[in-house]
Image (cartoon, rainbow, N blue to C red):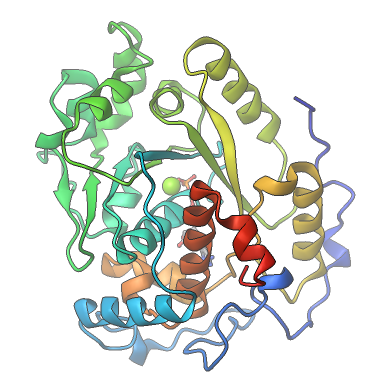
Length: 350
Ligand SMILES: Nc1ncnc2c1ncn2[C@@H]1O[C@H](COP(=O)(O)OP(=O)(O)OP(=O)(O)O)[C@@H](O)[C@H]1O
Ligand SMILES: [Mg+2]
């Protein structure tokens, strides 16, 4: 596997404000024609507090979910469900690149398409649990109990309110100790894989939200799934450190999980007004090629506000550019999984 050049050729000074187009770059620049409920965020990101009520537009979350489904239909209708469960590992050891945001919003998008989706929160910070409105204080049965105590996954999984078909195995602060506790346990790298394989409820997708490190928790995730999803933030140094993640993927594939591969790269926090973002996007596309989703996720105040209401952006502000981008990215993922992408592309839908 090639070692990456970093984005050092891209200079911050070169970034220029403007380009009024596109939160979403490329051929899918405007996946859903029609009015937006959100403008591209202004520099300094003023937040419309009046709209920041329980649903971002003052709607109950369940109504918001219905609107998200309507928006989804505008982006192309129902999606095929995979024949077998697809287990997606959302990983990047760089912090704050959008792993959790991507996990919860892709998971919610697919659940709104009728899929049954489990989010496994594998980060002691518990951010995915928070974003899905799942209680995760210290006494809650959590993924720690599954990994360290051998508790069945079904005993810790909770349904997510307002999004039918979406479930979460929460993380509590206990998980912070698991990296060390796992070291001395039998089959320390495959404990999550075993737990998921014994889970009896039917699932279309499992999304595993990894912590920003490459320790035993991330290794457990890499052993438990087949598809690695790497969110890359469109900023300086975006590719730095990725070589290490890719080498770990190779190592786990070689020794523990022959099916493992990087299936999806998603560009996050894309600001179409800056040259830096488009240069990073270009560089990522030239390194990774077909794994990079055509849809970029725009930088969006709505996306960043949603977790503080225990919601995904899909229910918080279903018509926002952030929600529509995640719906579109989820659609690409669902279609790629069934090989219908070429057909879609030739029909000009992607
Ligand atoms: N598209 C976006 N637009 C605006 N803000 C975003 C976007 N995506 C993520 N954020 C914000 O950026 C911050 C980091 O995102 P997130 O928590 O998803 O990253 P992470 O990779 O999971 O972080 P960590 O490495 O700490 O687990 C959060 O405050 C989140 O709300
Ligand atoms: Mg996170």
